[in-house]
Image 1: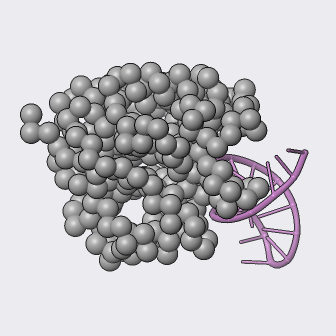
Image 2 (image 1 turned 120 degrees about the vertical axis):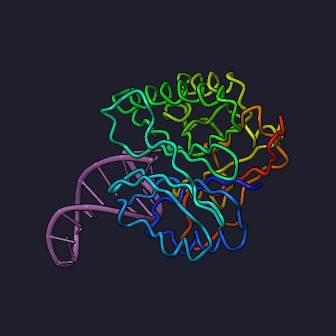
Length: 258
DNA sequence: ATGTCTTTTTCAAAAAGA
């Protein structure tokens, strides 16, 4: 089983890149973030034609998340994180698919910090943590995949110097991610590559992609019911014409029998 | 401070978020 997460940065302008990637890599399950489209503009027909069932939680202009399943229909188990009924940003959707629970998330960026956006980010991560604890303990195999907007350590960025004040590197955000992991989750990319630098995002500025000046902010977290087989990043997608600023990250795994 | 891209309002150019 192969599950991938891909921040597309606009499903409307990225559809051809997405379809080419789906055809070439054929992941079984896909988590998408930053659709930047309301529900009625999700390209369900094109995705179905590519062989995928889908659920989505869109929003005009910003955010938006979706879960795709090759040759199957994801069964939605949740839309939106619990814990704040007033939160109307589309950043979480969850489904039962292929025998596991998949949580697809797009954490707040949090810039500028300090400020209300950073406060919202930390509060959102707290809510994620509370829900993740319940999922972890549910007895089901669970994968939590998406754009966490957290660079976990200085080893997860080409050079932290110019990002020291960025919300993605703040100690509070890093502590949140660390506390989440301490519930028992396996960070698939780091587990697979303990000694290598591995990135999932290269911003559009300052020639970051040609210089391989990347950040690791897209993460795939596995609970104890899942056995990690392999993981990686489809870097070729970032090198395409008209690419998103993120590349897809993926994991292959099996589900434990007991 | 800057860099670049996407979306929205509105139908060109600029603002805002990332």
